[in-house]
Length: 396
Image (cartoon, rainbow, N blue to C red; front, side):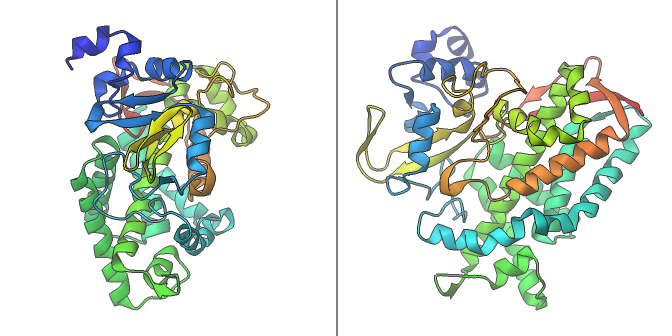
């Protein structure tokens, strides 16, 4: 399909060809999803990538997420994955064992031991750009801040070259979703796991828990260890850097938002509204295990299904004025962190990083605005985030 065809095709036709990885389709994404949610058949059947379904409404997404027997998570990436990615690639009952192993290291109480390290990282990244009064926010701050925190908290990684390889593979997973990107990240994970195993170090940290952990009464396999590390790094990098970029972009468009973020209570409600409107991980996939029907749409065993969290978060049945920020919602049951048994393991880690980042940023700069002549380029695919965000600012 040509770019011209995509631009001019009526929405009721484009809905049957929607490609979630095509940049030209992404320009009409919200229009197509809104049309689908309001139609008699809100479960889209697209012919992209040899065909898959897209779940667009809140109720249908919740039904799928709560039925792992019919909709398996074994391949959570829409275009498939060459490696297992526990815990997001696991179904009950083993999924619960992986979560039990990992949960203690993602509690807020545990993560707070790294608070000062995160603040130090933020300050180090801000220091060289302050005098310039400008920076490319994504590459100068959001990406290195998130990657450094992941390397400290999850990977205990100190090799900068290896961290760069992990960052590169993770970004390619979110934008290209290629098999090779998963392989490259798994290779890096295997290297630092082997080093930790050989060192004999046994400390109370996440990497030791993975190296020495067990499920179903047996030690984790090497494949499972590598998959867990790849999952935590790729997922953690995407969610936080995207949220930092999206919120900062909102600040450049509305000066009142900076003042809201200066209020210590903003995390209690405003953050959830930012996440609802611009859901960082827009969709993940399921595989149909048996012939079934969803909201009148027949599906066969083996069919692939995209759970579009970002679309569910704009479902007008649950969110008035769903296509705009509204900070006075009485209820905000958004699914930016997922729903059901696969609710995001790292949600406390993401919230803590976002909180620390903006505390440190707004302690030093103000009047954040788009740099003159600057262009905000948005990614398409799994992640909703700026690829480029050049900003200017004043010192406090």
